[in-house]
Length: 448
Image (tube, rainbow, N blue to C red; front, side, top):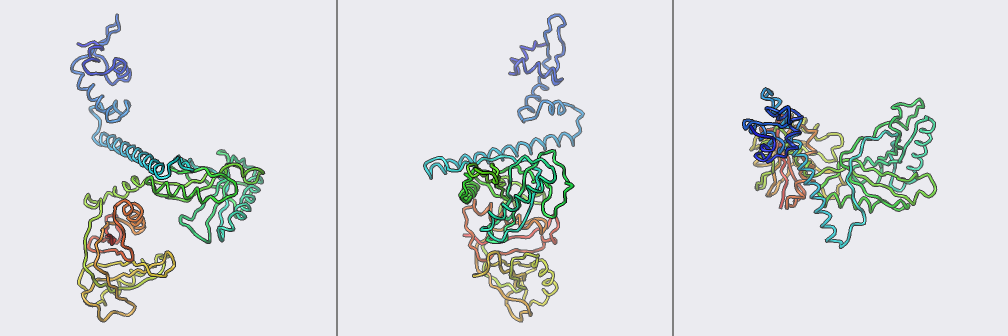
């Protein structure tokens, strides 16, 4: 038998650690001298000790290791523990990679500007916040100061009348995810004590009690509240997200760190916040679809000769899913198209010169060898020769926008390619199963 010190030298484990393993029941001595307290171990225990060390090296806690050492542990539970550890390590790796991107972005900025940035971007986690809130559509940016002041007063009077305790600060939430010159969807909220009720005896058609959702990753900057515009703060945040590999994925918030109704409040700060997501995490989520094949993780590249499409045309911004309805009509009349030379359908999407931003042309059609006897209410479109990056969308129609966002917000900026623009298309062949979970459609993006 081996004394604890001998085992410590053989296994390169401290005596302190061996005693700790003994207390936890992971590796008990085969015998303890009741007179001296010396602990003795057997060489036969070395494999168990090595397993403890190996599992510890993989990142398992000692509590998890105790369970993993059970020889009667069911296979499903064993697999579950290792799956959980793998996911945990992957998440930690993505988090550290995101931190590395932020450091690289800071270095780039210092090299470019020759100094530390004017706005320091902090990344934090924001808990859910109970608030009294009022949400309204404000006609234009010029109306914001006056309208927000009026909304704050309405909320403050309602909270006071309800007898609910507020803890501040005031928060303005901008629900428009894109810049808009009119009809700004704005919410003014006052943070309440966490013990505040979820309902109030004082009724109001406008002010309501709600919870602003928690945000796992929020990027924020402090902006001097001196009555000037917050545009520089937003510019700094947007530049930071692009430089450090993030995407904005929710409505922005402005926290007024001084009460705007009090004299002298302009001497304080406004904290401008935008919820963000690491592009690496977003990409990982995109490719982890259980139906995605390994060959579909990245786009494939093809060059196609020019071809002709005959189909039905829609023009607009698809605000009410008009394209989906048009496909239903088109499928009823597709048999009227002559000279079809492929058992697949196309959805051509084209930008129209002079159109209102957000509007586009979409043609649901079939490929033909010659455009003749074109059915009424259908059009002919020529698709020029081009080189394409081909992406696979898997699953529902509702998630198609996520695939498009991945293509244009994640893949294209990091690919080294440029989109030619003007026209791209969806390709529906036998892999398309009416947007079932394993349904596939292919998106062809012209590149150079």
